[in-house]
Length: 320
Image (tube, rainbow, N blue to C red; front, side, top):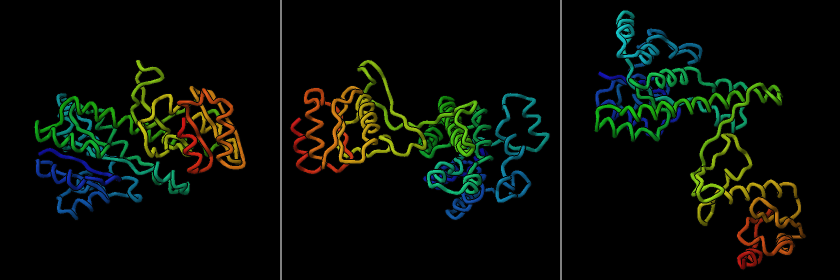
């Protein structure tokens, strides 16, 4: 019988997926809230303490950091010495890990207390993910509920995930844990007030693929910082075709300019150059002045305003 270890903070789809795994011969090991939701759904699970022979302690801070877990994950199965060590120490193999981490990012975005943020630094989760990802030749590892479907389809077809999928999932894990650690490092560093630490870690997530880059023969994608605040990356597009690389560049430049003004202001940018910036008593008068600054270059450019656009102004802009 194959074994899967499941411990998730993001519980989307986990009941259906665990039910599928159980029906396909997987013994399920679980922890805490995940174990409860699975048992409440009629899915048989083993508590992690039954595997480690040691209870969860210190409010769950210590529960999965044990040789019976990591030995089962890290064993190189075509290495006779590894398999011998496994048998001598009564450790059983673990074939799949489904883990996602304490929601540090979400807690950080809520401006939570330092103490609460510290408690949302996951230790056991990254350790299990990294062990499984390191040994992905033999272990399937999943950190994203969006990958359940692929794993399920391959088990139905091949009775296991393919080497290509194992490799893809492992790479995704290390991107995920690297990003997670980066957020924590940057948060703790920010508390020191240190402007220039010896190492800077950056973490970005994809917003969308772009049709092309600065020029049509180039490829590009749009990424945003995980904690991005006021940014075009967090804006909602109401209509129109997908933004291009140059649209994004120009809009970002226009937003940075307009943030310097408090009075009604309109900024027009074309190919990273401001072709009109003007303030007025209202947004319509600001628009008229902006247009007068350069009525030629503004065509096809980006227009940003710091007030709601009224119908009259919208019609005038529409004439372009």
